[in-house]
Image (cartoon, rainbow, N blue to C red; front, top):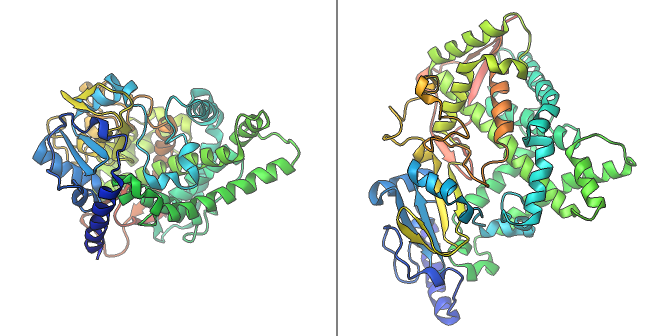
Length: 501
């Protein structure tokens, strides 16, 4: 059914193209020699590849194509857009660091243009845009800078403790690991933003945020005919922009309620990000719409990073009980009879951090990062890349590159404890390991995740034994993945917490 639609759409595109004689912004560079890649068909180019192979788990599909065409290859899903894919540490360094100033913008899928989200979102604004720079400053003060992280440490400690109290109350009953962590992470972010909780941790299932965020990621990551053939975008043939609009409207309505309540309170200070945003609004430096888009960035970024990484780590530890025991022994030796983990304890837990790093090597939250070429005359890997080319850096493939990693498919946190692993950190010099990207568009939530993920993982392992549901063995843990915009487990992880008094 789907491919029948593609064939029909291709015929339509063919006719419209001939009538329209569309000359998009990419055409000027189309004659330049591109890296090798799959041969396209007349008019529709590599649309079959774009809509077929990349519909599900694009990180794996792109890695398979790299095995055929090499660590740099290109394809053109339509007449007016070109994609160049990079799959090696050296090419990642060249694109993200050495030539990062020319690739500091992001490709904007058509679905992201719903309700003009791209025009106010830190995730999609050009890095030269004054609003992007203002957003970075605002988030830095409250979320990503050293000062902001120190200021919000009590919030992280408090909600990690509440998560543990919930799990202790659930002792002996299966829980959906990712779901409870997602709720805790959302409450941390909402307290940093609004000084309020948005999730009731004691109610599993039915929380709206996960469905909304999942819906957004799903739409933003799907191959869309509007991206391959932009002159068809006004028709929204696949309905992606309409579905995105509905999910964004739900979030904006929620954020609007927080704003109205704060304004009605008559200036009471909470020293949170909403206070800072409203101060900018009062000076006409930030509109209500831009506030909602900034808060959307914060929610869908920080909460998903924490949730997914903790769930992956727990899946691997349950699959490999000896590594689980090694980590639990380290936590027990450091914390002793202490009832709860605090962020100040984390520096004494090197194996914990190695587990988190190894999890992110195998499962970077955003497995394929996008950049857009913003200048003429740029080359990558010795090939010219035209202006407005979309560059995809496959972090997932790089993290499993057999020339850079010994036994790359194996979960071995110990590799991050060796003497030669000094360059293997989130901002390290070794581009075989950059799970948060690099350069101006490096994930702004890196430092938040680097503190909150280990805190949550240590907290849920301290004085809590974890067992698999009845009848399951470690070999039954499903480690298959599924990628929308982010890389999660294909099936939710269920496990049984058992509290040790």
